Amino acid sequence: MACELWAGKLDAYVDGELPPADERAFREHLRGCAWCAAHSLELLQTKRAVHSAASKRFLPDASFRARMQKAFAVPRNPGRNFNWLPALAAVAAALLVVVALSFTYNRNRVRERQLMSELADLHVATLASSNPVDVVSSDRHTVKPWFQGKIPFTFNLPELAGSPFVLLGARISYLNQTPGAELIFRVRQHQISVFIFQDRAVGTVLAKEMARTELSFNVQSWSRNDLRYFVIGDASADDLDKLSSLLKSST
Amino acid sequence: MPLLDRLYNFAHWLTRNREEAEDLVQETFAKALKGFSSFQPGTNFRAWIYRILRNTFLTSHTGLKSAATVPLDSEGDNDTLLATRSTPESILLERLDHQLARQALDQLPVHYREILLLCEVEEMSYQEISATLAIPAGTVMSRLSRARRALRDTAQKMQRS
Image 1 (tube, helix red, strand yellow):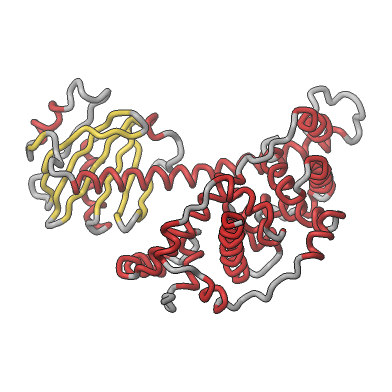
Image 2 (cartoon, chains in turn brown, cyan):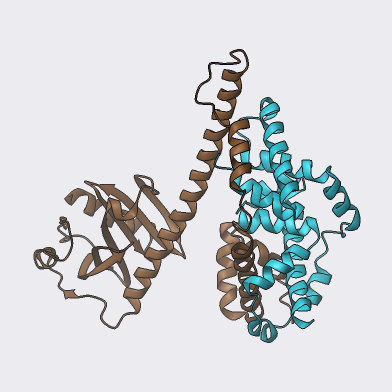
């Protein structure tokens, strides 16, 4: 039996085109509806198959590329045909800049999404693990030295007394094959992971400071002293704000 | 020329022929340069240049032929779409493999092929696709949905035969 409620919107869902509220509602719905789950999977498979089958399937050959370069790219010696060449070159250059920018922007958006979902995975993996922490301690003076020699940088931890946050412990985490620190905090019944990596492990895809929601987790991130911090958890954005402020004040 | 490879890939998928794809890309660049003043800053550049390529294709010999042999289906009603969807049990068993997807895509009518390429290969948003194909945003989703269905149906038929 087709799912009458959502059948018409499955394509928009797999294409990431549902409005945020609808997407949340649909994710809820997916848990209980086998029809929608199976068909979303089918569509995702189709998307993937087309992408891998058709991307870069045909490449221009060298002689055509050279012909196009000659006809349209910015000439190296714009001495001849003085009247029209500079204008054409300027237009071509502008064209290339616009194209390059729009591609960089899109690529960054895709990378940012991948990065965020990877962090969400790391956080979930920690929550699901039977050994969520490698060093069990609520004492920041125990946790910080534990990282010595294990990660290629050091960082400061805030004083948590008087705040609703409790440090549960820490573990080594990896992002893009680079080691970093994962600190696990608790606020009421929620666990929050704080990831600290070197800026270069993350690359330049993220804004200096950002906050967003990924797979219904709240995420905040900022860069300070060449280190990139991520705070992620199902606690409220307000709680994450407070923890972020504490962390920022200690760096 | 960063866009060359992508436009060429798209052009080759549309024309299914190397020489025609080359001509199409060359003409697209020429038109884009000539008409650059008609590009409105702030609007989507990518959609603009893909639109030029696609319109150039549609008015070419091959384009006219492929458009003429494929009548556009009525769009907007999803009833028939739902009825033809397979059951969860059957779809979990079949997976679209690389080669089959390639062949099936090649056989699709051009209006399905182009929208799948724009969405899955160029990774355009519905809004960009709507601007590129000059169709309403609402039509983008229904056409994509049909195109995916058609692709799977074609692949299934090819597998059976």
